[in-house]
Structures are given as C-alpha cells and as structure tokens.
Length: 196
Ligand code: TYD
Image 1 (cartoon, rainbow, N blue to C red):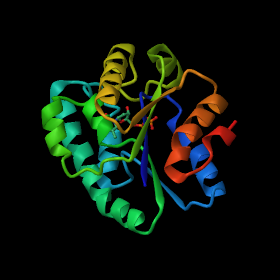
Image 2: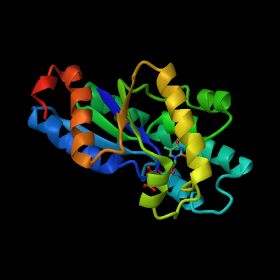
Image 3: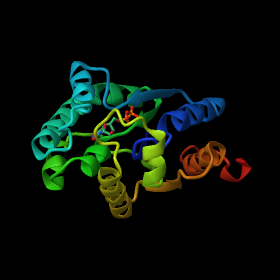
Image 4: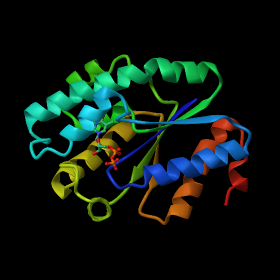
C-alpha cells in the first residue's frame, strides 16, 4: 500500500506522517516512510537549487522538473520492494508535486510516466497566507503568488483523480490527524467510526 501526503509548503505533512505512522503501527501494520526530494545526490542538488533566486524561472523550473523525476526514479525499486514485503509506505510528496509545482504539465506527466501511482493521496489543503506565515521563506517557492497557483493546481488534480482525499489543514493538528485516520482506516478494515 502506497499512501502519499501532498500539500503546499507548511501544510504540516511531516507531523501528520509521524502521527499516521504511529496509528498504523498500533493497528499491527509495518510502516516505512519516505520523503521527496530524497537524500540521494540528485535530491541534495535539488535542495540547493530550491534556494536560488531564479528557482521559479522557466529554465530552472524545467531543470527542477527533470531532476525531481530523476530523483523519483532512483527510489522506485525501493518502493516496489517494500510493497512486495507487505509494508505500508507513507510518502512525503510524489510525482503529483511535480505536476502542480512544475510546468508544462504534459511534459512533466511524460517525464514521470514510470512513477508509482499512489493508492491514496491525502491532500492537506491549507490557506496560502497560513502557509507563508508558517514557512521560513528559505525556498524561493514560499511566496503567496506562486503558492496560490500551486494550491489551485492541487485542487484541480484532486478533482481529476479518484485516489485523492482533501483534508482541511487549517484545523488544529489533532483534528487534521483524526480526519486523516478516518480517510485511511477503510484501506485496512480499521473501524473508522471508532476514531476520535
Ligand atoms: P518539502 O520537503 O515539502 O519542503 P520543506 O522541507 O522545505 O518544508 O519540499 C521541498 C520543496 O520542493 C517544496 O517547495 C515543494 C518542492 N517540490 C517540487 O517543486 N516538485 C516536486 O516534485 C517535489 C517532490 C517537491
């Protein structure tokens, strides 16, 4: 099972991933977490480029599109192996991040045609103003104009893909966590009504 958390910067993905991991483990499941960009050499290069002032330029966005796709290809084998072993994979981001952050969409789609399709995508939907207030602005993407476009892209993609569940991330962390657990429970025959 491959579960992905998506959302604009500052949406609380890492906190929620750790809470979801605990919940699934308490229910007897074996869980592995992954993060994109990864800690591969490509991932490290991506993290450096994200802090450049021209990170949102067309040339850099296309370069990042290629690098994110390459970084992702490098973990495909690992993901498939974990799945074969019966582990639940929870991932911080996936190829859907490239589809909403990079352009042009058809080209990004083609670059990611070997990417693994998640069984469930939890879209942590946060107001852009809150996102910008929560992040430190280190990455060039962390600004209102850019993230407004990304948020719109996310909502559009969520509508087009049946594997998306939208979670209101403007709520407090406990409410967000229980909404996530309720969305995930049916995948594992866990009683959703028993979750507070
Ligand atoms: P993230 O780790 O969520 O942010 P941080 O650790 O800084 O809180 O992601 C790093 C940035 O990379 C984020 O701005 C989103 C961007 N990103 C893309 O633009 N395309 C992609 O394919 C991925 C995976 C991330």
